[in-house]
Amino acid sequence: MEASKKGVSRLSTNVLAKVFSFLPPNEIIQKRRVCKKWQSSANANFVWRQLSLDEWTFCDVSKTNNSWVEYFVRRSRVATKMNTGQGISWEITPLRGHKSPIQSMDVRENVIASGALNGEIIIWAYRYEPPASDDSEDPVCLRYASNSQDDDAIDSIKILQIGDNGRLVTCSSQGYFDIWSFSFADSEFQRLFRDDMKAYS
Image 1 (cartoon, rainbow, N blue to C red):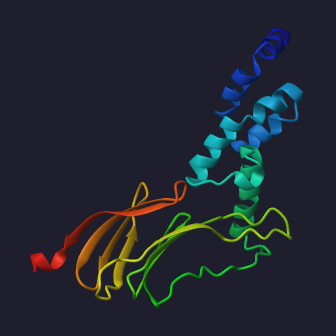
Image 2: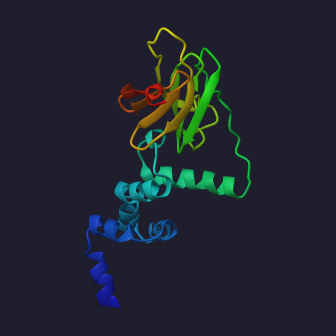
Image 3: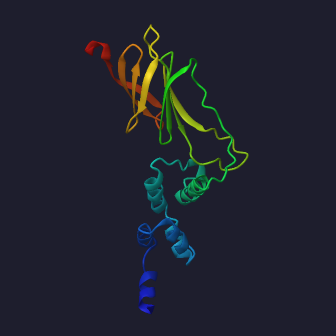
């Protein structure tokens, strides 16, 4: 037993962190209490980054000073409260932006896309977790990208669906089928492909 303790104490912080990455989150949190070295290893960003991405796919750590452990703990608390029906004091921020009535909408993970009567498409990314403090003025809408179609005739967006890897598929009232590419990181929103479905009828 004594030899085993000495062997563990010789492991580097990075090796310990790698070992901890195979444990469930609650056990990693327990291991942080053993000593300073273990606390440092258990708090390694790559450990909690992987745990967060495995759990939620899309994560925004900018509000936790890029601390993945803090992000995981905060978001887990929110999820627990939601699952047990405990209320969270959030302020609702409407996602305004369209100048004409919305005709179609899709939600996927943390992305909301909507298409309007005038052919405009707007995409929002929103956060799951509440603001860092009560006096925070962070909006629910982190970024949006919009594109008004250049066609002379009004061409409302009748069908709209968010796809994988930053893709959006739309079908308009005039029968146009479009595939769009969007990126919140680069503030890009552009049409990749257009086909006239009327040609097949």
